[in-house]
Length: 110
Length: 117
Image (cartoon, rainbow over all chains, first blue to last red; front, side, top):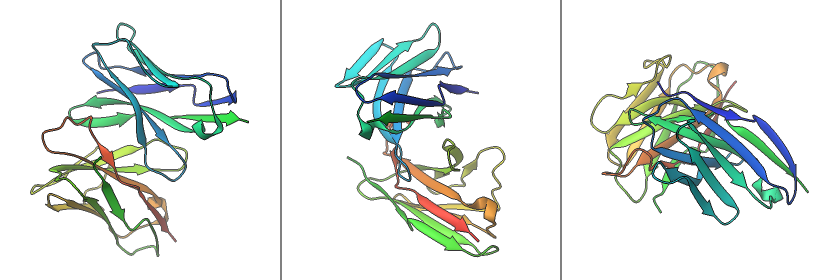
């Protein structure tokens, strides 16, 4: 089955700096790669996603890059702000099910 | 966008009692809904896939007789935690996919925090 890993598990950055979280997956047939943000006690929210026909997608301060050969995709957050502090999950899909990565706790220090 | 609600948002119950959690798709019909459990500082773990009009499909290690799922209509799925114990205390989240959409298109409920004393 699909195995989804994330690194690092925790990340602290100064406000204004960039943050990068990497996700690796095992199913070479995967073609959809999302990132979710979850604030404490709330539902996960899709913040950006990419499909296998593109290598990079950007939405303001957030970007996702994909390396299908190496089977990993990364979340990039630039000019981080305190409100970016949250847990970020990548996800994989197998047999019509979502498999979430273990999560990365991001802390942005003012 | 599509909205999914859950009720209650939080519940405290005594050990040995049963608790029912509702998941509703408010503005679309959902033939499939998913139930997740999330322990503190951990990821969301899929418990089961709820299919309207048929039996739910449970993930390995999830007891179907303990976590009863009913998906009697296209807008409502319920999860009943039977004979709850303190180790069942967790954050339960449902999600739903609109008809004819890919499984990637999932709308999450706000979650239900269960505390079993």
